[in-house]
Image (tube, rainbow, N blue to C red; front, top):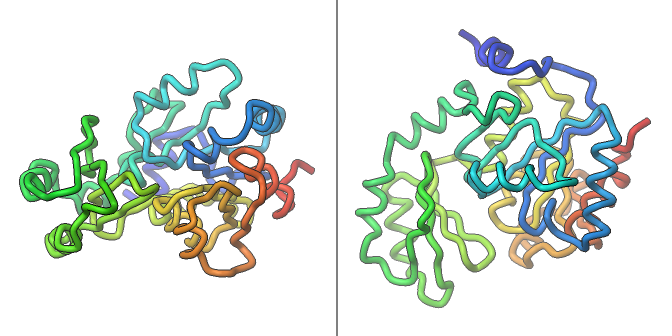
Length: 258
């Protein structure tokens, strides 16, 4: 069975639907960033349109997002690319995993959680996060204590090591991150690439902002991200923080409702 067939079966979203904006956005610092007024303006702008497909692309887990979208005024996404790109959920289908998009992730991870935890048990400068994830292992880390040998150990074992915000260290399946997973979703749903806007603010958003789609690094982005991003027409560096920067980019790329 093809991926497109499986996606059609899992969701009522029609492949190739004429969206005017596919907003694929990080949460903390991006879609949750900015002042109360800036968030209100962006959220009301999205809710007032009937041509927007909203996708949360985040390191957060499903329980957090369930609580988040229960808050008054918070737009509800159709999909979640969660856990730094290692999971995909369909919100309209009661947060069920989209198996067609998770198959490659699951195959590369190979149920490695316990193996990774055991491998890194005594490494200095890292602390295991208490939240369990299905296809990654996540730590808090201290930049001044993290050893290069720890990163090499992770990579030599066949995983990717991603650090962001000088706080988070994620052990991920090789080649899996926000950008590649978002790309697979765009392809599987035949979404209009020119109408996609990816938005983020930290290093774990790099793969998403540099995957060839329209992208915005909001004004409060970490300096490491800004330094790593190439100068390219499809990458916009906003001045506004959080939601203000996202709205700025929607206008910059002319993704406003016609």
